[in-house]
Amino acid sequence: MLDQQQKKLSFGLFDLFSEDYAREPVPLSKRVHWMYLFMIWMAMGVDLAAFYLGAAFSQGNDLLPVILAIVGGSMILMPIAFCSGWIGASTGLSFAMIARKFLGRFGAIIVLLVILANNIGWFGVQIGFFGEAASATLAEWVGIEIAPLWWMILGGILMTLTAAWGFKAISNLSALTVPLMVGLLISLIFASIFTDLTITPPIGGDEGMPIGLIVSLVAGAWMVGSIAATPDVARFAKNKIQAGLSCAFGIGIGNSLTAIIAVILYFITGADNVVDVMFRIGGGGIALLIMMMATWTSNDNALYSSGLALTGMMRNIPKSALTIWAGLIGTVVGVLGIYDNLTTFLFILTPLIAPVGGILYVDYFLLNNHKYKMAFVRQDNPPMFKPLVLTVWALATLLTFCTTPSGEGGFGIFNFTTIPVLDGIIFSTVLYYIFGKTQQLVQNRTEDKKTSAA
Image (cartoon, rainbow, N blue to C red; front, side, top):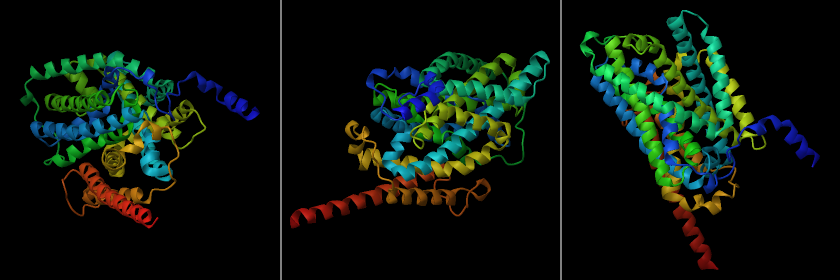
């Protein structure tokens, strides 16, 4: 009794925040309308990072191929988000708890550590963009210069508090910002229509980024979110269809629309800095303020998933406390300048995460669907090791690095689809289905022999 009282006292501050059913299924009575989920994912897709990526894609390339590549990358994400959203709504569980079921406790810890590194790194990337944009906007708008460092710290604190508060705070913030963001994007589209795209020729080297690489980077930028963060939000959906569609279209529309507009604006203005782009197109400080709010909504989701990932590894500490710790680390990472290495960051982590999606979807839809029924979901007693799953993940990850060009963090040994992130999902899907089905057949034959002998 005394230990329980001490534990409650030591975490009393964090009782002010919502634990959001971090370690159990979300009750049906707490599920929400699909529109909330759609707005959360729209808000996640619209951010400053998409503008920086759009400008990077444009340099040395023509307009139409880049736009088609962005759409192609988003189309890869949509079915992935649909499947993960379906599973999240079906089980009512966060990805951290789902991972324990199909990866085992040891495998879940390994994957959650990779996801945690991705989410905290992405948080740091966005914090960096936020700080640079805020500093430049204030200097351009009113002539006052405040170092990006202080904006990064302020942004990190605000985003961390929102994520620690929980799903309700995130959904309310998204409901506030999405109409503003959509209005901004529509106004930028009209500005683009009435501007002659030929006034500024494409700027950059003689050769632009390969189109296949652009597709992979677009998909890779939100691969972790589509696979792992989607169940964290979709578990609040009232049914599986609504969860899958809202997540798929939210990611697909938000992610592609922002990057496409960034590409168009680059060709109009010739500026590869989001601050310069906004002021040259006539959007100015108000447009940048809206985009900074968009970054807030995107970042608090990354941090929210980080807190849930930590709950899968640290079972006795409140999610809110873990979320705040993750936010502090992410802010420090941002201050140290990880945003200067965005593409390198994506190159390294994407091949590690993509195969996890294929394994999950095969396990849920084809091999072991019965283990995800509510009666099994409430029994959180997975095995420590699942050797077959870990072997498939390691092998598919290795193959993905083999198809990733050497200049992009891989080995560059051979090509498959020319889109490494898609390769990873295909490799893990095929390998796990073949090995998993074979294992089931062997187990069934063994059981039949035992039954016949008895």
